[in-house]
Image (cartoon, rainbow, N blue to C red; front, side, top):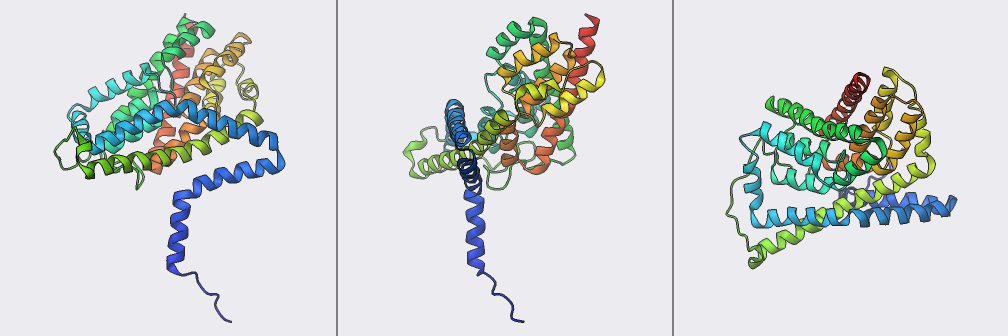
Length: 350
């Protein structure tokens, strides 16, 4: 029997490179195509939703991409990395505090995280900021106070900072044992981790545009980072639109009623994969609390869902190596559950 001819190695390599570079776009396009055939209205809604979400996230993307490209072109990334060396616990605390008070959402923080890791900032300090940032920001604090009360808003702020510190310390302890070096996937930034290595120092040239080589590096970094983030966030926002259309938020939160330990467990587990816009979730959770849902379950759901919304989780998966992604999810689960328990205990004592 004659063996079937094998495709030339060059063709296989080209197909592999095509899938690596364009696979995410192809998946996103395929989803919209299938929707256009079977549900044209939803296809239009999903496309508009994704475009609007990208437009809303654009200021964060542009700023963070520009910072990353500027740092690489000037050589300032070495200075930034060195600033995070020598006092990891202080950096973890500052990262958690900055994250809990910053105006970044779970998606808007992704390009900044990519920039920090590519510059060589230790994963422990970055993880502290990463976990704390999506949970609370100034506008979220004001809205949470209006919907759920000042006590809930303050507790959620402390939960954001506490989760950041918890995650940062956990990563720091693991890194001391030699784990989690080079947290970024191959081809994303340098994959460098300042806790493990600081790249060989190079002279910093602030006026990088005066040197053709540095101008080229700025443009290349900006372009590759933009395309990477754009394709993954586009796919994530399309999936988010489908979840919001086919799995109503009321259905998700209605399963979390009741008192005791199990509602907190369920709220944590449901909150991690389920996406709820942080602002839209507040009145829903507030209504369920009024109907008898444990406050701790509401807190656990808001914390878990805020950190691991579908767009953020997909971006983390695309950005970091699998073990870092698994750690991110594990810290989110553990932190959200602990936050719910502590808030439930505090509420019962008040």
